[in-house]
Image (cartoon, rainbow, N blue to C red; front, side, top):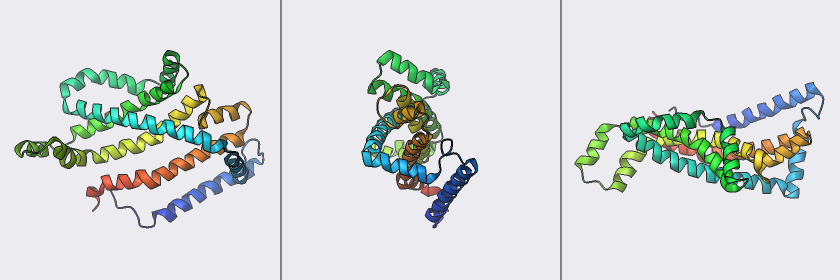
Length: 253
């Protein structure tokens, strides 16, 4: 993986400014704030929602669901992925299940969880977790298959404890795959959470987008969508990208 450019932050800022300028230009060409509001109009709505406390409340609800579902899907996906990657016979039996979970539409899983469990938090978290676990599983399964067998033999020769083997042999080899699963997971899981909230919750960004949609309030839809997108950008730059660089540091020339 190439080294991260030293001035990546200014480049990212300029890129985001370019996105805002493009959006602003489109809104001026459309000349109809009811169809495509300009950035100042959306920012004013974001500020009004933040001052009222609604924005913080609903973003916190969505972020809570994202964190819980992400943690559960990563824990299950990593465990099952390593297990299937290290045991080919077990993987043969489980592979059809994995393919079914990968190709089952998220909307179907969400609807079934709500019908079977009820319109509650357990169903919401379960639906998101099931949708994401298979993706993590496949990534870590490939990482487990790609592990160097010579290092595993080394762990057998020397009397290494299970913790030492995990820390110094297994995790360093799986770190790039964990980083990839983390990035892809966060990019997908919050979108699924919004659909879950849109369909059956009474709080969260998805719920607010549903309300604004019913009122044909495009400014409100953009205000909530962009607010949570901005939060996920901060998480990506502050947490995910540093972890990704650390996991891939051995590839840096």
